[in-house]
Figure 1 (tube, rainbow, N blue to C red):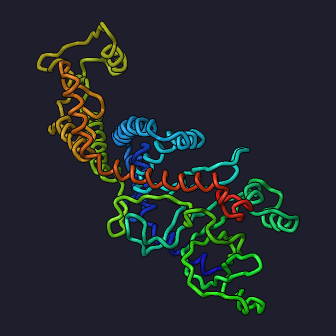
Figure 2: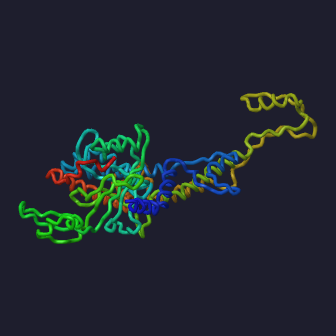
Figure 3: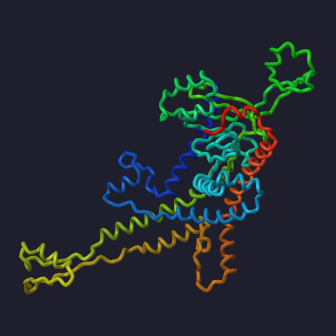
Length: 453
């Protein structure tokens, strides 16, 4: 199965630019805003290192984080209202998986990276059997590079990488002494060592046959190669067909198969629910990436203002030479900076009196430029004062404030509605699993191991 490992690696590498931009957006969201790399004298260093090497401080004012928190706050209110309308089964499932918190964190990921991935599986977790939702990092997720449908209709190869320790490996793949000995051979007895397990779900067309078994009046679906090997089945009625099926593979780092089989789920598909935004011509662009340029310019203005203020003269004393003895200059400096200080000096005809110099304000009005950037950031993000809960006037009416809030939501409706479609798709898979679990209609292979670590 090394060809599957190679295909998974090719799919993962095709998302290199996305992961690079995701890391950059994450850095800007959480305050690491001078980490972009630049070239100075042939060396590649970060902007922060360069500024520090020049003897300055890389200042920042994290506006992106505030914007992201405001949008999540609005979403939480909307989600709470929506969850109140769910039926009792969905409410119990939401409580078991803490979906209220999970969806908020998922929206945060969606705003930062432009992609959100969940995994729905049935099994045992924390001592309980049930239907579970797991949030997957997009950095470990991959799909076929040919996919371009924003609704996911042409996805045929999806999966993720797992970093697995001995305990998780045993829970998933060990069911007899021989398998445990093999696990110990791989890991040793260390619980801290991990290996990379590749989970792949692939849509395949497999030649199979429907065979009628007269004794049990049943119809079996078997692989074509199995039918060819079993001569006793050739006398029975059968029909050849191509089966459109999703199959799973768990592969070790050397390509050996740890587990494989048809999808055990009632929807006969993979367990993932994911959404990429906007996925136009397969391009993924996040909400945060649109605000980075304004954030960078704001940081530059703040840092520039600090440089100018530090370089300008502030209370410098011009003391004519000879009016104070050389050994008394330090005492004069101390008295000059002290409240109600007294300085005794000998004035000389024609020499000016001691004079204090204060630098004037910068030639460029940086405060005005900052105001422009903050306004531009509001326009780009769509998060204005009404959405943040700031009243433009103390006398504003409640209806007018609600109207201003609704108007502010217009620019965010696209990305929030896109995330709402992700929640709908996730809820649909939850209902599939709840229905099948109630009917005890899950494949027996589901009981052999969990599909999540």
